[in-house]
Image 1 (tube, rainbow, N blue to C red):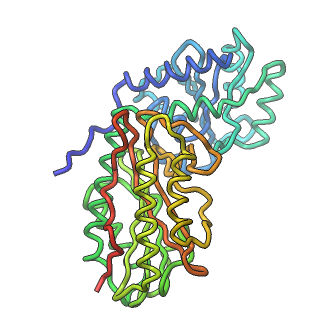
Image 2 (cartoon, rainbow, N blue to C red):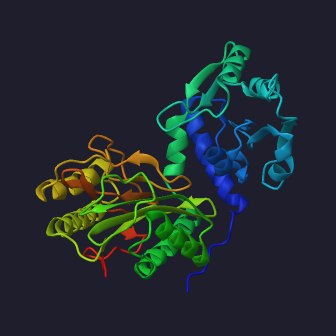
Image 3 (spheres, rainbow, N blue to C red):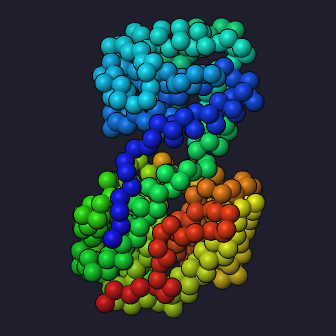
Length: 389
């Protein structure tokens, strides 16, 4: 029986994260980094709230070069932030469009500009601002003489290598979702819609112990599906359909992300062959998941199997990605990403190919990189395409 990991982290976990980012800040000559997004703020503070779903209020956390993070947040979040390891908390009454925390934020930033007069802010690929552009422009005007430097690379690198406590949570949710997929054939019904079938799957995952599933897509079609990012829709499942479900379940803020394919009644030789090709491609990708190899090595290993197997194309654009507090994290398994794999990295293997015009077959598993070789976090899919009779 699976034992759920303890929720949250010890304070030592946050101190370790802080030490890592501050070392990199020193190397990059930054006095502070400004965080504005849910994941970044939670990662360094432990502040967990669903209130980020509301776009009305911005939230700010500053990481100084030589001190604990400082929170500048709407007063509605004060008691929640006081429950974390953060003790420097400033608040304002929000909503206040005239001054949505910008004065407090400006003063705090200026007080930290002691050494380099450089503020770090994530500006690169996969980053977002999560504050009004007008407020950001106002902030920049208030910071005359302060250099704004891109902190994307160092922020994502710290999150790239997972701690043992993080890995424990990812493994747990992967195992829950794996059990759900293994039980799924008994829940699927021909004659009902994609949505109805997925709703049963969702309910079952909740009974198994997942917290939520922000991402659960489905696609189906006679002899194959044409999309892996839409649905579930109202299409009624019929014999001869190929059905894919891809889920990103969450336990204590950490994701799994993998899919499973099923055929109803029967499957064409082309569909069976495509399933075999992407399954074998996943195996080759797994073999390439060695410390010192790169994400491009993973891509090339999987892509060769698919090209040799008759792939007509790849509409996905990448063959997997990082995984953690977000469904998809940096890096991407592409031909030119070339990120070096390190011990403690969690990554997805996601080979996908078009095997007939307009028909795709995609397979995905989750993998941990260790010094002794890769480890499956998701339980391996069936070797042959499952057929639901």
